[in-house]
Length: 166
Image (cartoon, rainbow, N blue to C red; front, side, top):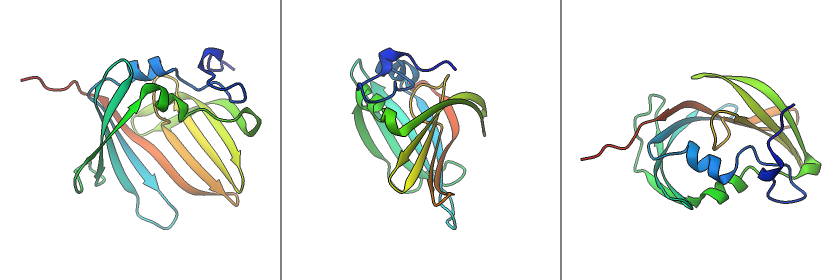
């Protein structure tokens, strides 16, 4: 199994993260647009769009928008700012509670080789799939409790649309 490189390890007691801050920055240029479907048992799915609006060597600005299933906006968007290192830190998991495997995952926009981080927490198991060719957030996340999926977030679209210039 080809693990992420040791240089991605942020803490000695954690596994290496799938991507470095620099890889995330390179993989999330202005215009990258991600559509997410969130599912909970017994509930209608909800949808979010994340658009990377701008970034520099240290920081990224994203626009977050609730949408309907077709991607049409619902309500007003919000914005968020994070450092690329903060985005990398989100993927840092404790080594003693995490199993790391390689899997192939089918998504609505293609099949991807992924690293699957399975994290044991008190009362739950969290699963994070990171597509090796899509630096940034996990392409799928599941929370399991009592042997059943309690929630799932799936990336259903990923596009890079350069910002328009006047």
